[in-house]
Structures are given as structure tokens and as C-alpha cells.
Image (cartoon, rainbow, N blue to C red; front, side):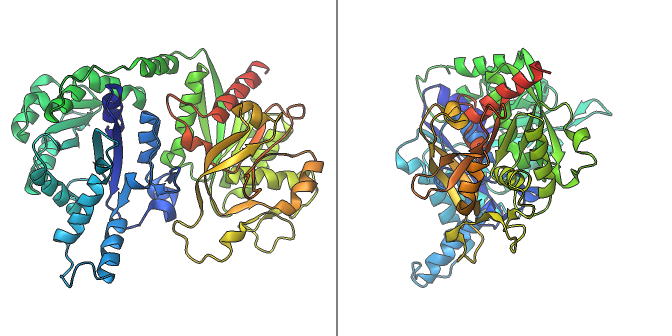
Amino acid sequence: MAASLARLLQSRGLSVTIQKFDPYINVDPGTLNPYEHGECYVTNDGAETDLDLGHYERFLNVPTSQANNVTTGRIYKTVIDNEREGLYLGKTVQIIPHITDEIKRRMTLLGKSGKFDIVITEIGGTVGDMESTPFLEAVRQLQWEMPDGDCIVLHLTLVPFLHAAQELKTKPTQHSVKMLQQEGIKPDIIVCRTEVPIPDAMKRKIALFCNVKADSVFENQDAKSIYEVPLLLHMQGLDDIVLKKLKFRNIPQPDLTDWQNFLNKLFSPKSEVDVALVGKYVELQDAYKSIQEAFVHAGAVNLCKVHVHTVHSEYLDASNLKEKLKGMDGILVAPGFGGRGIEGKILAVKYARENKIPFFGICLGMQMAVIEYARDVLKLKDACSTEVRPQTKNPVIDLMEEQKTLTTKGGTMRLGAYDCRLKEGTLAYKIYGSKMIAERHRHRYEFNEQYADMMEKAGLVLSGRNPQTGLVEIVELPQKVHPFFIGVQFHPELSSTVLKPQPIFVNFVKAAMKHRSGK
């Protein structure tokens, strides 16, 4: 919802950014298990953030930063650090005003930069959650402090549809708004999440009971694609009402030509492919959200419907490997941490390599490709990563040197965008069409340089390195040996957007299409 509104306002020539405030006490989601909170999204400046920032970037095609995601943990940490430094002059530190003041400072920080006409702040959680109470109080204060037209509140609420009775229910919305008003906040606009269309009479009822104007109640109905949502909201005039309430004048109608062209391609594929996503968090769709969305973008640009089949690596073994991967036009081995499920990932790499199926490994997936090659081609049967087997005799993947003295886990990985120099004539160079690229990282372990010569003599191409450290970023097989086999230490999925699909994904889908046509 936030990303769609921002897309509409941006399409009208306004400079827009979005920030996410999360009520949990973790300083950031970097130490959270994907099962807890889905994917951890990484920004160019190295912030580990909520996965919603990925939606913001995919919709706006503008990078986010450390400033776009704030948690309760970060708020309290700042206030406590300030107190320890004596910045409160002996005052008793309290939720009001100290915590709420820090929340307000963070909420207005991006706006004070002068770069943006509009800042959208999304507050996580639900009205009534104990954790979000200080954030709501900060919003109440901002509504009171800021001049009319400088701040509006949009409340997103659920209108459930009871299938047994074939009936929409507005009571949850009424009670949600009532609780919001008890916090002292009056919503200016109400948007109703719904499975089915909401009749105008019901919208008028919501307006009456929730104390908003009838033209300020909108529906956000289930759509074929999340990328259709901006158009559906524009058809209802949401962006017009927002601009009216913010007292913007003479703003042109949005130019959504590029967006519509993308949707036309997305909804009119001329071919299809089946791709296996081999990972160990596949039960939760949000664990690989950026990868899933990168396939949507790459599929659209290729006029191809990409069917992503998730395969749980922990339950992948020699007895079911062919059954699970049979008929796949491409195999992607996903990122992850720890030893659980890695043998299944290694088997998936071997299957893709030996059967000439397009292969794409990301982060841990690239490391598994290196281990598989070392074991099967170099005959180093005990080759492994020291993350999994600290005492292995052949640590082809090892802990980065600068990581060996660290004792804390949060925010200490190699994070953010780093340069990578590509070797001319390689698959990576053909994909990017450039000698130097920059992609985002999130890892502690790396390719062990001691094995570089041995690997290259055995046919593995080390096609990308960091120019400052020499760290191997990309490995691949020559196309005369394999049609498409590439592993990258970075996370290319994080930079894919609707209007700028990530080139490795685009070319991986092309390779999968070629593989399918050759069956």
C-alpha cells in the first residue's frame, strides 16, 4: 500500500521516499531467523533492514538507506546512549517525552534533508499492540505540532469477507479506528484491504462510523499482481485525495506508461519455464521474497512466465534428487546460513552441472558450487566450508580474515554494495556488459584464495573479484562446457526493480527458455 501510493505520487513528478518503523526491540532484523521475519533486506550503505524496503525500491526504482528503517531497539538504544552521555541534564528519562521525541526526530529526518516533497512513514504492527503505543503517541504529537496540510494519517484496515455467509464485515474496521481515536489520532483516509469489491453504501457506512469524509474511504482489493495495485488505487483517485489533503496544487496526472507496459508484458507471456529454487527456508514465502520478485521482473522482460518451484534442501538426497528436479529448466541454489540442508544444495549443484541445466547460485549457493566442484572434479572429498566443518582439511570456503576477531553478531557481516571487476570474455562480462559493477553483500565466509590456482586449472573460472581485496565474487563454467553456470557471492536479487530488472536474472531466464526449447 505504501509502495503503491509512493509510486503514484512519484509518477506525478514529486520526489517521494518511504520509511518503515518496526515496533520490535531488535536493533535491526539482521540476527532474526527468516522463519521469524522473512527475508532480511540489505541497502547499499550496509543496513540490514525490514523486507518491506525491498518493496519500496522495487516500486520506486530509488535506493533506500539506513535512515529508511527504524526499530524500537534503535530508538531505545539512542535514548539510553544519550542518557549515559548526560545529554538529558539530569532529567528522569521517560517514554514521553524522550522516547517519543526520538521517534519524531527519526520520522522527520528524511524530510529535513530537503531532497523529498513527501515522506511516507509506514508503522508496522496493528493498532492496539503494546509495542506500537509509543509510535502512535509520536504520530498524535506530530499531527498536533505540524501545520495543517503538512501531515496526514492513512489507516490501512481489514474488511474480512465471510465466505460461508457471502458477507463483508466492517466491524473490525470500526473497532480499529475507535482504538486509533482512543490514542488521540484521527485518520484522514481509510483504505480497506478486501478480497472482494466493497459496495459504495458500505464505504459510506465506514465513513459515517469512522468520522471521515465519504470520498476518503478506498478499497485495496486482491489483485492478480501486487504491481497492479498502483493502477487500481489511481482509478479510485487515492493520489488526488492525498494531494488535496496535503494542499498540493496543480500537480500533473501520473505518467504510468512504463508501469502499464510492464504489466502488459507480465500478463501476456509468450512462453513459460519451470525453475527450482533450492533452499532451506522454503516453507515461508517471504524468506526469499526478493528472489521471487526478481523472477517476476526478469520473466516480464523476456515475455515469459516463470514458475518457481521451491525445493527444501534439507530433504533432498540421492534417492529423490531426480524426482524433485526432473523437468526443471533452471536451478537456483538460494542463500542461507549454517550447516542444515547444505548437502542437498551440493547435490542440486551437481545435478545442474552434470545435466547441463542452467544454474545460478547466490551467496551460500555460490559457495556450495565451489564445494561441489572441489569434491567432484578436484577429488577433494572432504572439501567444505569452515562454517559447517571448522576442522575440515580442505576449507575451500573460509571465514573472512577480518571476521575472525569479531565476537558480536549484529551488523558485523560484510554488508552493503562493493565493487566487482569482471574478467573480459566471461559469462559475467557478457551479462553485465561492463568491466566494473557494484552489488550488495551479506556474508562472513568467502572463497579461500589458497585454492584459486587449483580451481582454475581444473576449469572453474573466477570471473569477478573485488578490486581492493581480491576477494572472489563470481565463479562460472565456460559456456563451451556448460550453457549457463554461474555463482555469485553477492545478492543480485536485492537490486532488481520493475523498471530495471537484474541482468543475471534476465539472462538466467533466457537460458532456461533456451533449455526448454531444446528439450
